[in-house]
Length: 114
Length: 113
Image (tube, rainbow over all chains, first blue to last red; front, side, top):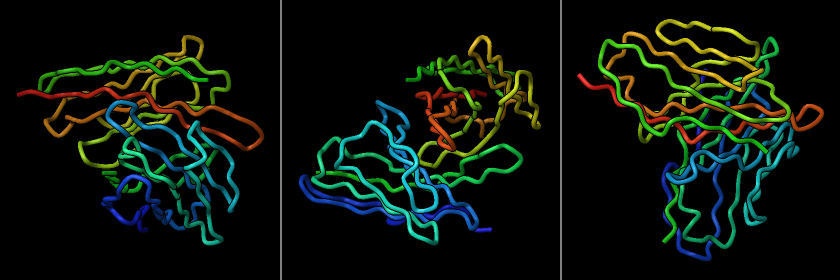
């Protein structure tokens, strides 16, 4: 079974631009979560989507948004990019089995904002 | 909110045993995870605890005490490839069918010969 895939793997943008990142979950997984990882703050939760609905949201400004499609693929968008948005963006898909939910991470998209 | 604490760095010798501690404070505890992350790679799942006690999986074991808000990851027979960051993450119930996973900042383990 293929793992979580994310595209693109690397991206360079300039301040003020916007960016869209894509995530395809493991087949059969309906929950997709997004995280931002920076050296100083570690892994921080952005939002979670389940069955095309945002089920949970972290403490990020409204410039960060996302959506999920009927095939469970998800996108996140960051508008009006700032230098501090440079980070590794990780997507994780999960499936509840036997009362246990385990998140499996994709390889991430490394975003550099200049 | 949540507060998750784990040591920033640890060093251990190849072949030895190391214990990485994690303490947490949460209002709706619904499970604790340990992940391994090598530099430049995505985190990979190691273990999951939701009930008190020890879960063993090969060279890795994880322990949980819900009353103390405490967990540890035990790595035995350390190998050089175990050099990585180890992330403690707590799943918190936020509402009906809604959960959030909050990560600690990770413990960077260096295994030396």
